[in-house]
Amino acid sequence: MKSSHATANDAKHVVPTTYYQFLEISVRELLIEKGVLSAEDIRNAVKEMDSRGPELGAQVVARAWVDPQFKQSLLQDAPSAVKTLGLDIGPVQLLVVENTPEVHNLIVCTLCSCYPRSRYSDSLRTGTKVVNTVHVRYANRDRCCWNSVQIFLMK
Amino acid sequence: MTPLFQTGNAVRVRKGSPPGHIRTPFYVRGCKGVIERVAGEYRNPEELAFGRFDTPVVPLYRVRFQQQEVWPDYQGNPQDSLDVEIFEFWLEPANQEKT
Amino acid sequence: MERDFTSRSHHDMGGLEAGHVKPTEHDYEFWEKNVDAMLVLLTSMSPKLMSVDQLRKGIESLPPDAYEKMSYYERWIFSITQALQYNGVLTTEELSRKLEEVQSRYETEEV
Image 1 (cartoon, rainbow over the protein chains, first blue to last red):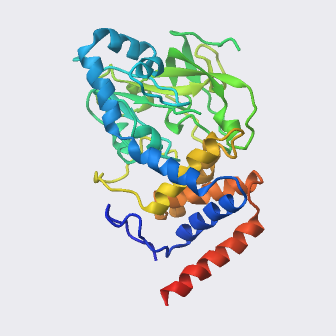
Image 2: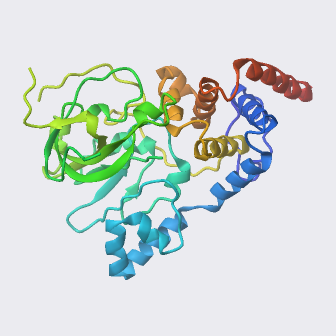
Image 3: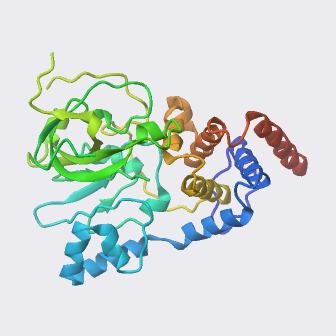
């Protein structure tokens, strides 16, 4: 029996009942027992993910709207530009595109092997629409005036 | 590693598709496009997927395709384009004739 | 335009019809966050214990019906477990023993 999605209130208190929930526990406990990771490592990583949200990207976009020099540097070298705001995007490559009255960009990912939540929740939205892998299947067949830009995330 | 292609070069996506981990989407295989930018060099994800973490870096390009080229029945604006990031070994010069 | 269509992996779904999209906001379950956290840690350690590319390849290996039936993080933990075995971080035997232990732990508590 598959457990249904928990609400925000009881996210921490779901009793494991499915094979994959047991598998998560098994992998986690083994990695901890073998000294590969610690429970604290995992807790901290979860906290770190939870602390990030789209407001970070919004911060960058807002700055680009009011600061033309920042906008140019963002378009030329996004990782360096966001660093000047104290944001570290880690090992990910970041490319920023700009929507204009003539050109609208739509960011899609069409290889549905993963949805990098830790990346897209940080994503910068310079007026482009970030879609998840489910929306993608429409975006490429969209009949409006879009440029579709695939973001290729690398480590 | 010196990139084979530069911005503005016409390229075609190769078609040979082995089983494995492929990062070039199905819908652009065999399509003709133009190099929009050289996007740096990275370890090949198609090798990393097999647990080989020390393989050499390979140039990556953002390739711009016309939507009409990619989708035979595309009804949108003829200027609409599609940018996809593709590794060098998936690309060949567009004027190369294959038998 | 002539194209040479070879067989296409299920995950490589760009451009295909997929039905109506219902955008919803939802939080992730505790175990799902753990899966994500483990993947981040395992792939960012030095030396790394698996690659995100291995994660993707494992998910891509799922047959279409399993892919569609499994939830997002179910696919992840399936793939992570495969990669860790392939890379020699965990053995199938220790996983098997641990799974039995965990299953009996929670199945006893249910009574």
